[in-house]
Image 1 (cartoon, rainbow, N blue to C red):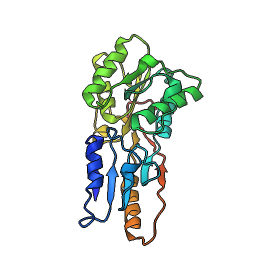
Image 2 (cartoon, one colour; image 1 turned 120 degrees about the vertical axis):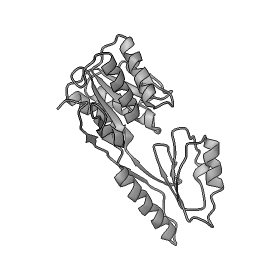
Image 3 (cartoon, rainbow, N blue to C red; image 1 turned 180 degrees about the vertical axis):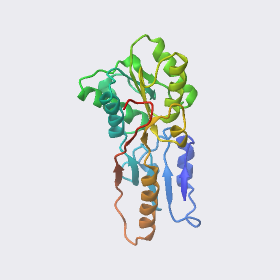
Length: 252
């Protein structure tokens, strides 16, 4: 059984508590950004494998990509191809103080911001706090478009955008075009997740691979191993690096 949960934490807790083991042998749970689960919530008596960037506190298997390293890759890719003043779209109610943001240990938005900050610091570049676009929980195309306009309106120059998902990046591309800003000549843009639309957007979007072709079979393999085992299996974090999928919103 695979469950993708977008309810508040209370809803996910009910899902975990009321899971019917007479119908299904185990659960693969994709924990959303909105869910704030505790270790006790994940301490269940049936096989459980979790996906996503939330901590599982060592109580369940956790299959995920390395969001910090992915964000470092994304920022580094823009820098390697000529950007030196980066902006971010998709921060989520997190600290703008780099020292605090660098302490993030879970959450897609928080970990990706940490990765961008780490890469900029290693390259000797600064990330202006005014160019960290906080979109809260709204990672839609419209949110990306509005935040890109806000960044432009600050008057602070930037020549690269790391958007924390592809929808935000697409919205940013719309706004850049509306303002007559060339992509990738004036501003490079990179997203996350490699959704189907990314390859067909105009211009086609450079993005970080979500690695779904690895996550899906790995999580199924792990849950089947747990279901078929007569002995307890120690929970583990199964983490893999991702990769840049280069398209037309970054320079060659």
